[in-house]
Image 1 (cartoon, rainbow, N blue to C red):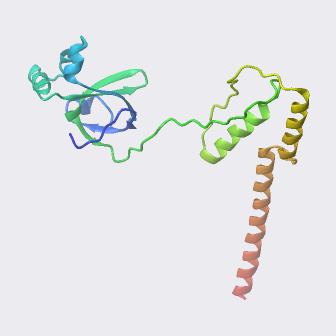
Image 2: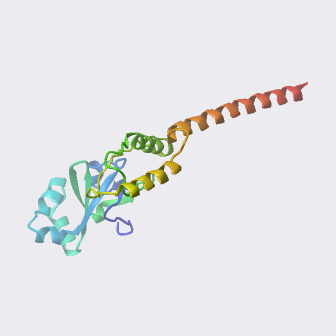
Image 3: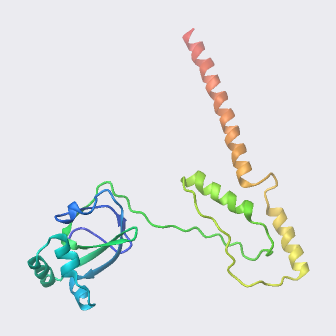
Length: 203
């Protein structure tokens, strides 16, 4: 159907018209990796008559008609398998489909000593992402420049500045857990006060 908006980079579920409705699941998220024309596949030496039409029990007449109509071919990828679907064999974008994209958060630390231990920072970032987004993210330390020699005076000044900006009461997760604990205690006290109030109303 021409009214379905499909673009390269989409990740979505689709419902399909025969014969693809019996071959592809409407509950599966597919990556749209390429959109080309049927004629382009032929021009690049591929045999779409076989692997798109005959292999899917479509006829040579279907193939010829689609060639004449300059049919778009949508390439869908699931894991390592690629499916080539004529555009007019798409029925709808599944109603329960949600668009996804791969996201990356960058943290520029600028220049720091090469022997700086970032293990706790990496752990804190991973726990923060997990607590906020429910995702176990892969957090890693990557060196993106050659070593730079910092004069001792400049190094001392930078370290003094860094020390004044550091959190003095433990790492981020320690602070976060303390806040959670305090909130939990306050909630318990609030519930207790509400119970006392309700009991007084019942008298």
